[in-house]
Length: 191
Image 1 (spheres, rainbow, N blue to C red):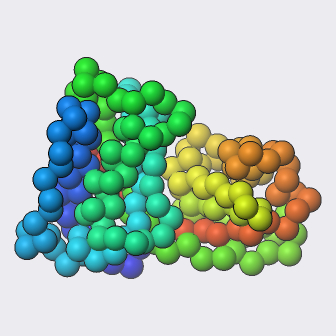
Image 2 (cartoon, rainbow, N blue to C red; image 1 turned 120 degrees about the vertical axis):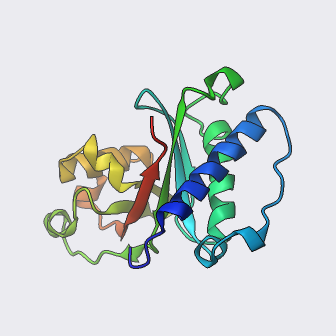
Image 3 (cartoon, rainbow, N blue to C red; image 1 turned 30 degrees about the vertical axis):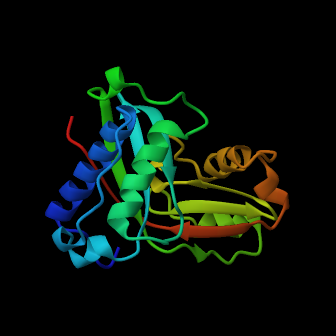
């Protein structure tokens, strides 16, 4: 990340994410952001993922891989989506609000990772640094770099990512998939 956020910007984004989830859970309309209160970095286009956890267990995670709106708006939108639209979980309920911890990941633009074999792909990946996107015609899936903490072996990581994409786990070994990598600036609420 060449242009890291300040601590104040990180806290502002966490505040906006928390506020968005709280308003949505209570069925209230979220107020518009005042651009005059945002730093230039929070107004510029940015891609983010917002992750919700309860006691270190995933409760929702939704985001965008490419920037299409101001970073502050992106974080708010994906905080609500993580709470209500992650198909792996039921919508967040009001009694969960105080248990949930929010994490924001600001993404760099993905770039194609050129490789000619599965062996070369394994060598070119940077565990704990790279987020990975696999594409196979119409299917795609991603894991944020934080997933390396749970799946540290690159071959296992790619197996799980293929399964997430809805493919056979070993598809990456015998098909030349498109592989994109990106990095994140990740920060979370204190416990």
